[in-house]
Image (tube, rainbow, N blue to C red):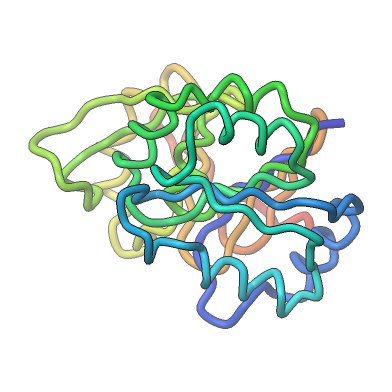
Length: 218
């Protein structure tokens, strides 16, 4: 059963309920592979995301970081052998380009590993996502990008949603006519396990140009 976690961002580590389900889902802890969101920058090494896992007591025998210092074929092999794949937060567009350039999307989709993404990483796990200057992206205008497509929905993660509901709805309405969009701010998560979707924290569903807050299930 494939398990995917779409995370926001966490200021004070994982909340207890999220920590509990991660501990239950991540039973194989041989190898974690982290995928940089700024692969040219050596400092983008996932230290914050790793600290969340460490604090939760989820530790691995091997830690690997995929960036431009790793050859494409080696990166694909690391993903193939991973227990957990973690797409790091940061620069959505640079990570998206890196995934395409290194042909990692199919490797991730084929993997049986637990796949986790934080902020930018969660967005790039989506089937499609909206890139817009109004959503804080460093672009002019608005366009739709293809993500990895682990699940047939979109994610807006780690955005000041509560204070920008009208703007978010305007930006995301066209895509919401095509696929569901899960939108959240900090300290939130969406877990897709098999056919079941679980909600941690304040998460909103945007569908058919309407927005509604979802009940937390965990």
